[in-house]
Length: 125
Image 1 (cartoon, rainbow, N blue to C red):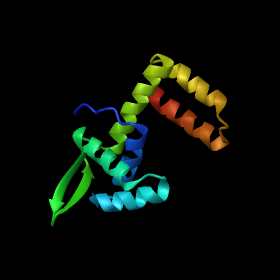
Image 2 (cartoon, rainbow, N blue to C red):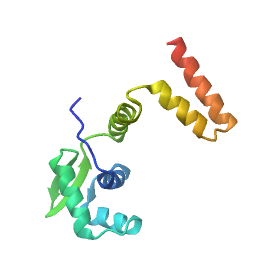
Image 3 (cartoon, one colour):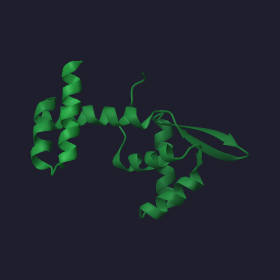
């Protein structure tokens, strides 16, 4: 798997739009983003350009219109961000992170059952 570059918070917002529907034109991305954020079209185009430079977005030209598509899956990006977060905030200690999240979250009975099931499956494997 190729190295996944760091993606800024603003770039994540653009990627969410692209992951949601692709191929997608810059105009369509701008239209969605203008409804979600108070960003100017030029800002959005700059973010698209950065993502292309980082090899996170690809494009093909169709009748003088650029259609963008992701080069990296959302799942792969989330996995990289998770690892980066755990390393940066918890010095790589997953247990500490889980304890903090469980203690600081209001978990429903269903959440607790699902976590127990995941831990049981992990223990069996």
